[in-house]
Length: 276
Ligand code: RET
Image (cartoon, rainbow, N blue to C red; front, top):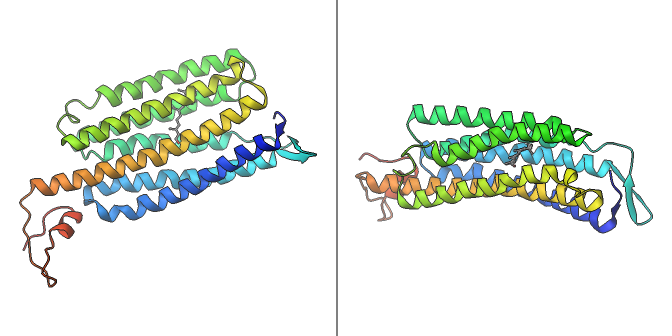
């Protein structure tokens, strides 16, 4: 572990701490938002809540491992001798990256067969990408790192290509607002996910030392918040739009309630028609 100045150490520590708070808040928000959307979109929001829950736990461990790897000497943080355990990140990604692609498919509520085939293909590719990347992350020679990087890039491109071309006309058939939100969610995946394979190579491209270490830790952490909570927010807005669109397309039976209002909104939030 390279020596870190007080400011560098604090930056990494505080960004990881911010990440724990964001993941916790995101998990709560997505979990309790399920009641705002129709039943068929709730699994997508539940997965959006599980992802930051898993990450929140792992970031507690990552932060603990990071602070244990350093000890303060004068005004500089030096290696304590305890290794920083990068495996927590990979364990987190192995669980959450497949779930992220599944939530993106789930929120569209496509036909069962298309939904199942897309989720299976994408989640297997996502897990494979992480498994293939790990040996390179801990490699001590650049040859090994490049080899595993190259292998992990195959499922990476497959996932991006499938997100852009593998949905057939299922995306085109969505209401306009949903199409636009889905396009942005896909763009967010493309941009945030592209950061990881670039950051991975940083130590082998000459960005070493304390600047490299701080950039890598801060970069991964911010990318994780955006990829998990940011994508979850898109999923939430897509689910809300689809709930509204479904309700607008159905002949909603309206009943006047005791307050003189109607139950249409409640009926929609519950997944469609309320028969009266
Ligand atoms: C690795 C290894 C090198 C090649 C590639 C990689 C891709 C990693 C990605 C990780 C995404 C993580 C996310 C986390 C969410 O919080 C494994 C670094 C392609 C794309 C989205």
